[in-house]
Amino acid sequence: MQLIKENGIMAGKLLKEVLDAVKIERKSPMWLAYLQYVNEIVLDGIAKVICTALAYLNDQIDPVNIKK
Image (cartoon, rainbow, N blue to C red; front, side):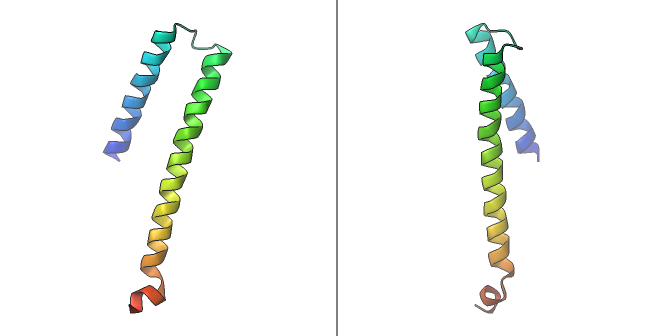
């Protein structure tokens, strides 16, 4: 959990750097669209990690695999 928290903080800092670099208002529709884009990438990654972990867990508790 600590690694997730640290990476979230780092992502927030990077987004702030981008915001400062492009000199755009936080409530700008363009910025909000960019945040939504980044959030979708993050959520896709989290979903893939969960699916991979569940598939691995399923393999570990599958009676056929246990017999091997």
